[in-house]
Image (cartoon, rainbow, N blue to C red; front, side, top):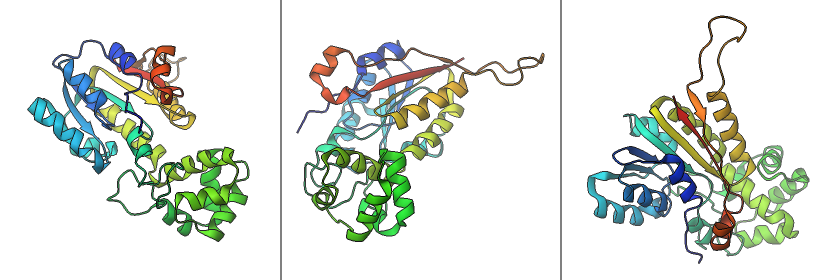
Length: 283
């Protein structure tokens, strides 16, 4: 199992600046790498994660930092309902975590034979198998095309509906072409966990809760996530109203620097190769 290494952590810390005494929301706790770094820098941290398997790492930080750390074992879409105070900064490390990929029982990876599950939150209903079983062929084809960029999406959807694979290896045996396996796994995982909808919902809440001067930083790992973040940040930083008229509304945010992994980080952590950091600051 590959050791979990927080991606673009140095770039995120540099962009946040001095966070001593500030309240930082870590929206994707994972193994706690970001949260620990923020706590070590003197911040108070509120962390979200819908995966119940991360509670042990969260408990360790709670024991070490006490009231400076709070863990909420729910999706970051619940930020507005479960944390109703405003906060200084918020960080999203989006996508799937190394621990989820490397856990051979959860169905995220085609390297292990496991039930076709793929739920990040195992308390919710609807596995990847349920998705294949319950969607129409057309709906399944749309998911494969939109989230996996599968050109023969209708052919694969028809095959999956006919055979109804129940394990990861059964799914791989049906797909056959190695070039199609990873995108199909990705598409099913994104759909099962409503990953794109969750990002849009959470960013909408952040817009309302972030304090003046606060920063929202997102680390994405594929173009679908990055497109949502980029378009949302662009909208936040645009001037509102008709620039030809005397009354216009100044943008509430300014764009921060983007960052990609440096060669040194990629050498230590190959899984960082598709990472992209974007950020905005409330003005």
